[in-house]
Image (tube, rainbow, N blue to C red):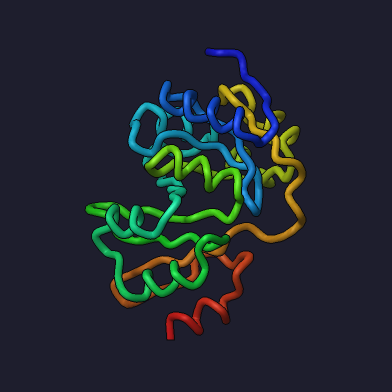
Length: 197
């Protein structure tokens, strides 16, 4: 595997990240909540390597990061008016919307981290992502922690500085009976339910 590079979160890192993604590599990168690891969501081999790096079952879905609502809407078979309202209210931001997509479900999120959002816009598609830690371990809040945990799996680490203390993203899922909150996080249950009401 290519020796991992570490770059500050700037335009040079963005260009390097795009090249790494095109070559099917994984990246370590900052979000507004934690440091994440991810790669091309449309590449099955990347998804397998991401699962192996995390130490989780290959069939367990990852979060898909996008730069706009339209990408999530277009990639879902179960996007409804409530998903639209939640996305328009809280995106970009720390809310993941788990919506049916064919025979499975995808957890969509539009992050509120400026560097990452620009990368997603330049990439033009979704990134499959998760927090940069083995399953069950605390997520990293700085680049050095992310590298120590999963650096061997990535070709590039983007250092955006320390992430401020705070909760991970909230996760809401559409079910047959409506919407449920799967994970309490940075956006309160009250705020989510107010939009769903």
